[in-house]
Image 1 (cartoon, rainbow, N blue to C red):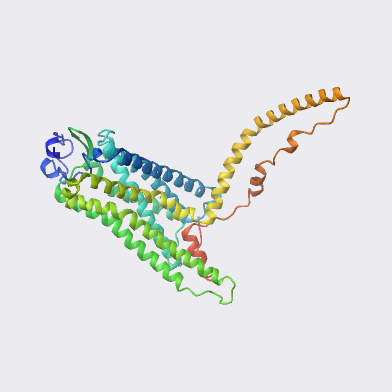
Image 2: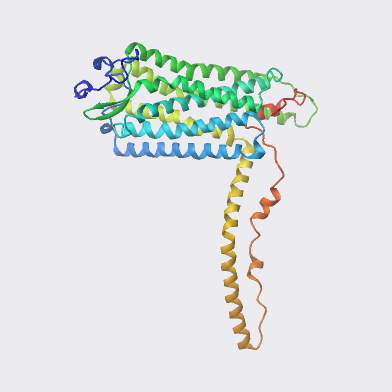
Length: 425
């Protein structure tokens, strides 16, 4: 039974009268929904279990990794650079992706239906697109910021206040570009279940797909490639300030490491998002190719979608966890949390030790009365391990300066005669 035979009437009178790009003709829009209906039965239970594991792991890694980035970068000692503002915003956007993109899209296809209701359909689609655009635009902003910081350090000085305004602008622009989802995303009722679909007129849908790909993929790729290529050539061609310095070789190795990291950032973005955009193009241009082989389309969609969503947990790894200073601060934070937990448990532990010491004293006293002598019992607490707080108390107040992962590292390897950048806030 094909999709036309199964389709039930859908009431579009609430929103189709005032929106010209929405098509209510069933025969024109029946094959353009971004869903893979009727494919759940074509994949094995083992494959479904594997998908659950992969999506669950991606969601958990994204939530944990980006939450750690936010916790570390929001510490008082680390609020010093404009880049930290961008990295925190990137982490928030990736957390939003992990909450709205992965679970909802995954459950809709796995359960072969939309179970969250008509109200949630446009809201979820809007949140998904907004979070994706915010994450991508933040990556572009980081690239442009580092371009001016390395290539043109005196041209633009971005303070933390300006960085916050840029972050607000990113969210406003991203929300504006995602607003059409509030109008065209609706829960559609079929005989085999409900689906959250984009209801488009044919002439508008392909144009929107092309425009979205240009804004969210093609243009960011061009900007990232251009900025990081220029940064790489600047660092590669930079002669050391003093040929006789011992650390010249270390600087050269550090520059090569940074250039490799820049290539990793661009390659990771290109590879992560390209398959999903290709799938959307095929779905719009050749829907019969997609629906003609549901099992193949099912596998390709999940591979492409998971790869795109995995970008949300790879960002903190590349931009934060690969930086030595960030790892030091993260370990310090985790040890403080562990030390606080140990400190809260210490009164109960000491009380138990005291009780055990009293019992031991009584036993020794009884033994001394029997033998006519009694040896003094040592305080069992004297042999207890050193307080775990000692290490952290020694570290408190030292105020290690945190410089931003990729971007401040780029500035560190440029020669010492570079013009300074001033923080005015």
